[in-house]
Picture (tube, one colour):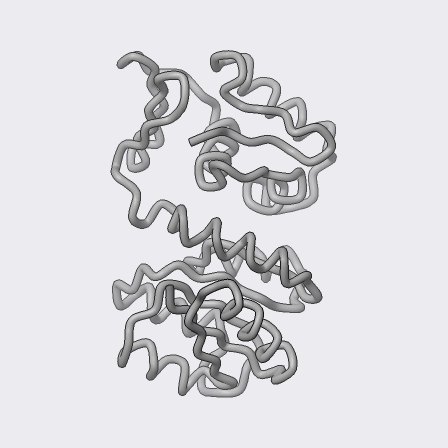
Length: 219
């Protein structure tokens, strides 16, 4: 697996590179968007790790937007100190699969990288995904079925389900729910209610409660 890192903080970039290389990844670092952008068209990468505020003609958001317009579907994770919900939303709108706030633990980085590469943010998934307990989810139609029968879900329930599908095998925390489903802070009690409503429409144990951490579904 080949990873491109766009990060102008040299110490952080080196730490990320060494850590990921020890984990078996091939890593190439760039400290400006111009060189990173050129490299993407010269060689193939399996993942982009992009800072936002970097030297060059384009910031990280703008660079990924251009890549997506050109049909580039390589998964990307933004790694940035930006914390406003507007910036978070912009990152996902640009086509990122995940968003890691600085400072972060390198172990967390590895987990996020593994998850994104494994799932590729739906980009390489089949149009219909087979789920546990006989469920199937149509990505394009945003439709869940069981034995050919449609399961009626509210809009928020569908967003919750999609996030759980993207993170299959991992755990979705309350922070991830409010960031990716609501786009703003939501009380954890409200999230539990919404997830509870979804669970009532599904077979028992389809959505697992990981006590004190969040929720998950299996492959």
